[in-house]
Length: 117
Image (cartoon, rainbow, N blue to C red; front, top):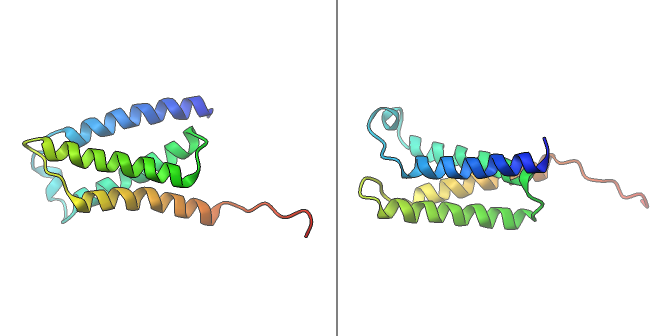
């Protein structure tokens, strides 16, 4: 896929995930196991990191900072909603999800060999 396609996917993902983070959650899913919301935050930010990495040519630290800023913004937004609450644990899960992708990327990306030695 082209970078433009990934950019469109990233934009759609940000809008969809922001809507989901703002939506009122009623029963069911939240009772699957303790801290299911932390796992969801981790997974969503792992996916966002993949898409962002393919969509934009930005240094890794910039991508991590942007995703951390988005995570902080989501928690601030949730803190203003009467049916949601902000959570520092959710923010840490967001950051861990994004950082995990970038750590794996650095580990598994082949290094270019030095032609001189």
